[in-house]
Image (tube, rainbow, N blue to C red; front, side, top):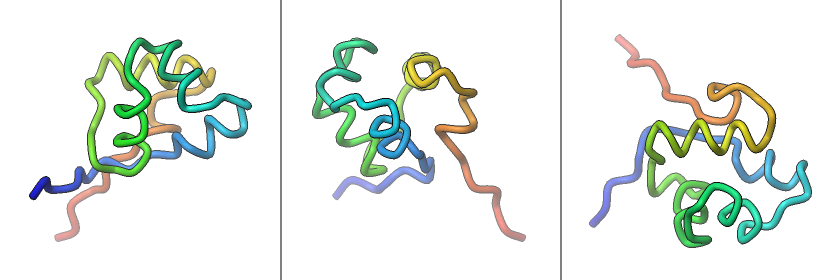
Amino acid sequence: MVRPTRVTNTMRDRREEAGLTQAELARRVGVTRQTLIAIEQGKYSPSLELAFQIAREFGVSLDSVFQYPEESA
């Protein structure tokens, strides 16, 4: 069983605000629609390069799309 990533994201909300389909965003950043689905669902963490490309498509900073929770002590 694949362990979900701890990285969370606001990709779906950002994508919908931008009026993009999963297929359109996938084409723009050079990945498959299935990859975007997995990222949106938190089943897969994008590479750093892909994360920057996605944020750039939305015209926002990386940390406004992707978050990594801090460890609680």
